Length: 177
Image (cartoon, rainbow, N blue to C red; front, side, top):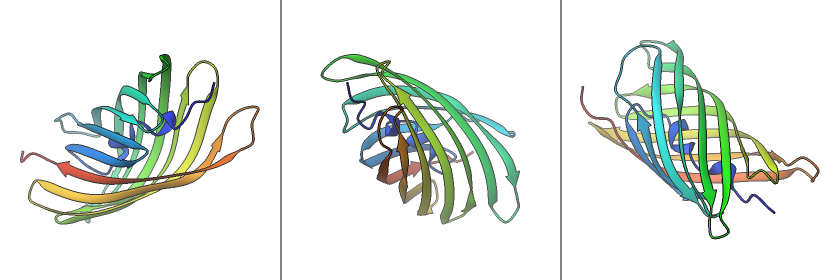
């Protein structure tokens, strides 16, 4: 059995540099996710989505703010666990992701870079990508539009390593607080 692109389903929406809710569309994923209202160094997020590999899933996890400067520069560490199924041949999928991101969130724009390890298994094989993900976007008021990408290497135990690539259009909404 081949686990196709399940590692890039959600939580891509959780890795987008947003403080509110986002819709992420691109190759290979389409999803929605966001961060629950709250203050402090730990925020909780939820996401759901699917991808071109035929995986539908739901994920949740925390994001820790390690650095938050008045200039808008932030450093964050995130983690998520998810579960879902491959369609049309039903098979359960379990995924987890860790990411470390740094960048700037300013009124009107954002830019950042993540290092992410979004692993997945369908209990027949394990897929472990290591991705570098740049993010850029513009916004006004509560809305933002941006682009995300990812490139890296995918390790599947027992097989040759492969190159991974993904891109995303990100539409974000952060309600006024």
